[in-house]
Length: 188
Image (cartoon, rainbow, N blue to C red; front, side, top):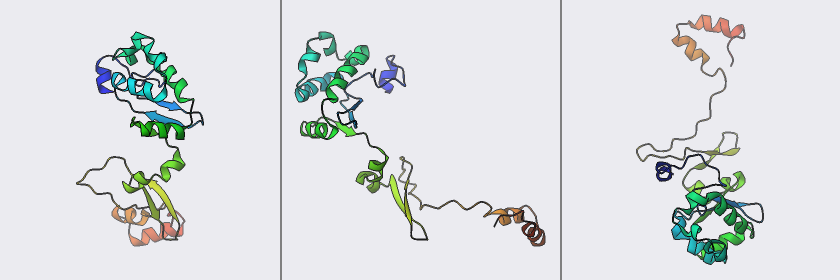
């Protein structure tokens, strides 16, 4: 994106007018989405045409063969690719693209992410066990630094949990704090 920006492409841009239609998201026949990750239009177009059997739609227009065609004809090319991707289910495309070693990825929904083995293994998602025996999944920051290990999950304290400590540090005596507690001014 930084390279494209330096030659005049503005971001954010619409997925219907990307600078490279083979590096974009598409809906499949079953309503699920997939990300094609063909980083270079010129490099990946021949392979995409071979995989899909749709060479004529692209090669009949010489303008589409230009290495920067995506920048010029992004909306048209995105429509062509979209019309192709909607022909099959996501599972069908995954098999086809995987067999052809064409870079792609699933666009996951929340239930899929919560079960993603790679996200769990890399601790982007982690399970926390509460003292009462229940558990929940939480997400970590996606950025990790080797010098700063992932810290244990600490549930936030309830409202008022530190009031006595704060009042003591502010100079209130134990007797004054007890008067405030008796009056209901301090949550416990």
